[in-house]
Image (cartoon, rainbow, N blue to C red; front, top):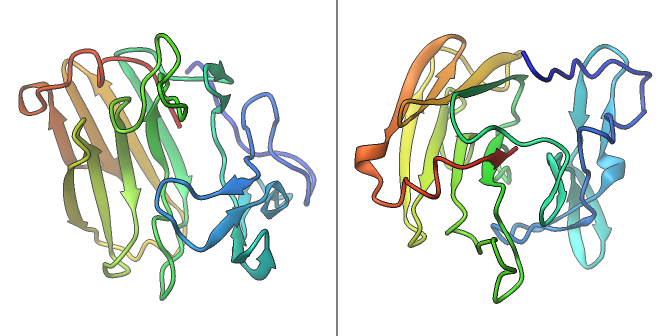
Length: 212
């Protein structure tokens, strides 16, 4: 174990700034109608970090929400995975219901850049790589989508049916990367494996460090 965050702290305090960056920006990836605000992310005093979505007008958007990132900006790593032989797991309770889009723990290549052209040594999305351990959108309460994004922007998307509702209690989601595979688990059960032989751009993209 090289890093752990149990979100211990007083109620209302932010998560550890040495481990997590809280953006103050719109959702550029999916164009949803929310603005990310650091104020919407706080500890609850019981070992949990809570992201709160609110119906409130802010910066021209009708909703606000929150997001934690392990990178504070382009090349500004708080922590990222090694290139290979690693695992990340989190105990998460996800929301469901009308209007919820892409609530998820997900991985983005640590070489990402938003600037066109990208800075030397960096890449634009989707060339930097992305794996979504579990996204919830347009599915049932006991389903998630596990995705790998191809360099051309297409999605290798897997709809997974679980033996529980994701909005009822906390469940452990684990992602492993080793031996030319990305493996995605829920409560100890392996549901999806992405393999090097099935992804032409694997070398140089999915065998490099990722941020969460």
